[in-house]
Length: 215
Image (cartoon, rainbow, N blue to C red; front, side):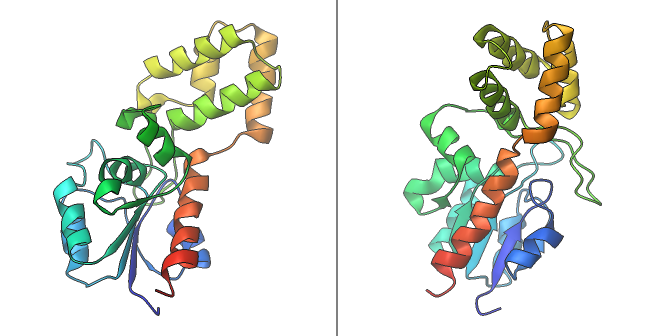
């Protein structure tokens, strides 16, 4: 690697897939003190995509600020990276993607909007992020598959389901939509559904590759 790059990722973008795009040191979702440990390896760039929320304390603002003060370029997006970037961009952290913009604008505020449960060994995601659900339901509404009232109902239902159990099937089947709408919406999600967090994770890698590699 021309620059030493450390990326924290997991369910949003599997390290094996990410490595095909950007040569870097890929580490599991970031938690408290992981940035401090990363700084011991003297990186030039740190990318924060995924992070832990409930398994152990989340990555702190203080350690990210220490990285920035040390001259490390820190880029965040997709999940925990987007949340922390929205809070620290005034201090030099770089935020990219839809999730970052949603946090920055106040459209979303809670870590619940991006929280998912995943297998720590395989990084396979077992639930869906609320922000991706809201996006796809809105698109389905725009295409006429569901009404505005249905959209409100779906988003409300999704919010009431605890994030480890939040899947498209659990939300749609627990809603008050009629059977035909449920079936059509499930088909739409399978064929046209977009994973916002994955797209933003790819943007983090793209930003680093195109904007920071030659500096």
